[in-house]
Every structure is written in C-alpha cells, then in structure tokens.
Amino acid sequence: MLTIYHLNAKLALIVHHSSFLTKNIETFFEQLSQQSCGTLIAHFPNQKALTKAWQQILNNASFIEAAGGVVIYQNKILMIYRKGWWDLPKGKKEEKETPLQCAQREIQEEVGINPLNPINLNPYITYHVYQQNQKRILKKTYWFLFSTDNSEIVLQKEEAIEKGLWCDFEEAKRLQPQFRLIQNVLSYFQRYL
Image (cartoon, rainbow, N blue to C red; front, side, top):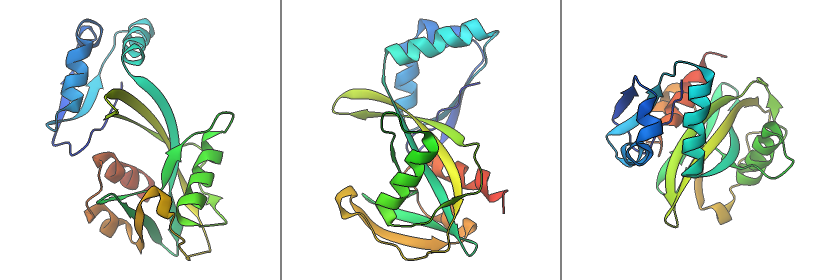
C-alpha cells in the first residue's frame, strides 16, 4: 500500500489494479496534482509489482527526504505559521544525516527549541508530491514525537516562519494546515499521550 497526501485534498483516489501506475504514470501524477485527489491507495499483487510501480514514480519525479516533528511541552504541541499556513517544523535531510538527526536539527533551527527528547524512535512516514521550478518533486518525510522542557520559541525568519504557537492537539487539528497530512501526523501522535 502506498499513501500520498496532497495539498488541499478533498477526496481519495483508490486504485485496485497496479497497472494504473505502470501504464499511466502521467495520469497518476495528474490525479495527484488535482485538488480533488488527496490519497492514493494502491494494492499490488506482490513485491515485484510494487517495486516496479515505485521505480516508475521515481523515474518521473525528483526524490527528496525530509524530517520533522511534533514537539510537546506540558501537553501542548508546537505549530508554526509560514507562508500563510499552519505547519509543523521540518526540513530537508542532509547527506549522511539520519532522519532523527535531521528532525532535531530542523526543529532547533526553525524554532530554537532545545533540548528535544525523542518519545518515539520509529518515525511516522508520509509522501508528498508537489511542483517546484516546473519540476515534479516526491518528498518522503520522517516524523518524530519529541518532548521538551523549554517553551521559548525563537523563529527562523529566513524560512518565512511568522509565528509559533503552543496549543493542544484538538486546537492544532482545527488550524488550517497547508497539507492534510499534517492533521494525520497529529492524529497519529496523539495516541501516545
């Protein structure tokens, strides 16, 4: 099963035959880029078919990895506001950096929170497709859950981060995040509390 969430998604695209990906890769990306398509769930008969479909996707998009996290301080989580949307701190993974190291670095850079104590070491993983400079990008993001005893937020202005907000999980899910997957990340980690 492959799940990809997309900007302002309203509906889910459910694919029951792997031939959809292998024979119609452009249709696959077109559907993902439409606001009406939020989730792709594709079932494959075996690992070979899944590997073939995944290779088709990678051949038609630039692949990048990123990491970020949900940071908890006294039962409140940290949300950031950038470029007109609520989001979670995250960023691109550097070469030779583990996903956990990346998440810690990005959170420290974007909001100045330190120390960060990992609550889970098994990340929640999402995939996101978008266009940048007329190139198709497939981003894999590793999400971690952290606790901290430091509530002081120091925003990284170079990343266009305008605000930081400590709020409870339900309030965070009511904010208007840019990507629906942020609400899914929040729901996933809420079960740890």
